[in-house]
Amino acid sequence: MDAIANIFLAGGALGAAAYCLVLSRRLQRFTDLEKGVGGAVAVLSAQVDDLTRALALAQGRAGESAVSLTGASQRAEAAAGRLEVLLAALHDLPAPAAGDAANDPAGATVFVRGLANGVSR
Image 1 (cartoon, rainbow, N blue to C red):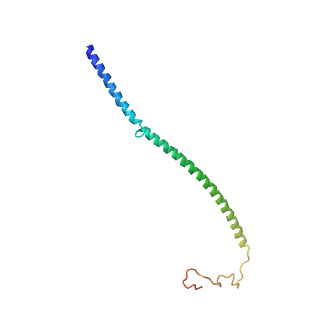
Image 2: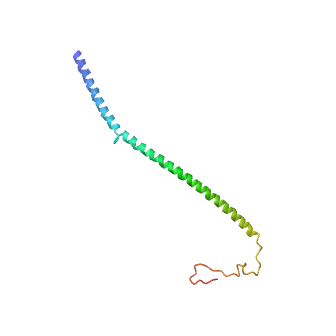
Image 3: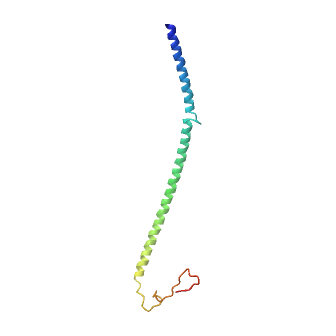
């Protein structure tokens, strides 16, 4: 009976050794830096670094664009203010006289672009 128990015990030990060997080989392939998860982690880490640099660059350019747009908006508001003043000044001009050809669009000569012979109407 002891011999049978020893045979089963030796078989179990050999089975456990084979199982450990298979697991060891799988773990080595799993953590391989070129093909396994280790390689994937290394690639993802490099991609995260690249994305971090790209994000920082994009944020810097967005800040520059915001400053540029703020300046353009301020210039546009100043120009709009000047145009409002000019328009208000035009309302203060006297009405044109009825016989004045320089201020009367109906009697003035009008040139139309695009005519082949350059005739005015």
